[in-house]
Amino acid sequence: MSEDMKRIEAVLDEKVRPSLRAHGGEIEIDHLEDGVLYVKLLGQCAGCPSADLTNETLVEAELVQALPELVKKVAVIQTVSDELWEQAKRLLRDHHL
Image (cartoon, rainbow, N blue to C red; front, top):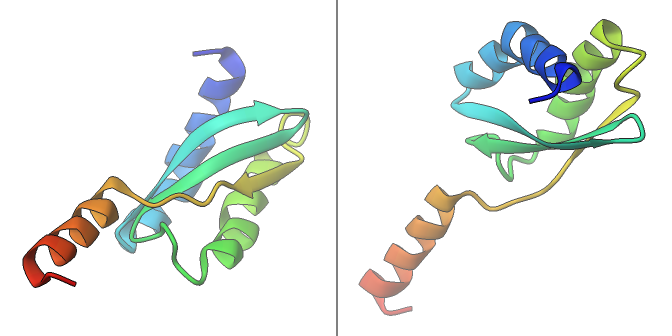
């Protein structure tokens, strides 16, 4: 892991993850490109209607404040969690939808 990514992870661990985990969520870095950090919100945060607001008010705010020379913007990559895929498969298999 690069030194830049270690710095970003440290901010996430200290400032972001505790709040996300309190709501059953998690965050994972996908990549950093030209000052834009691409992340995935996981757990209960994946696909949450408030994901964009969470990103702007928590994730991006903390990272830009702590590491302005490194992170200019944070973009959420929308994904479907493995847990949600498994739940959907169970519903289809068990309820013959």
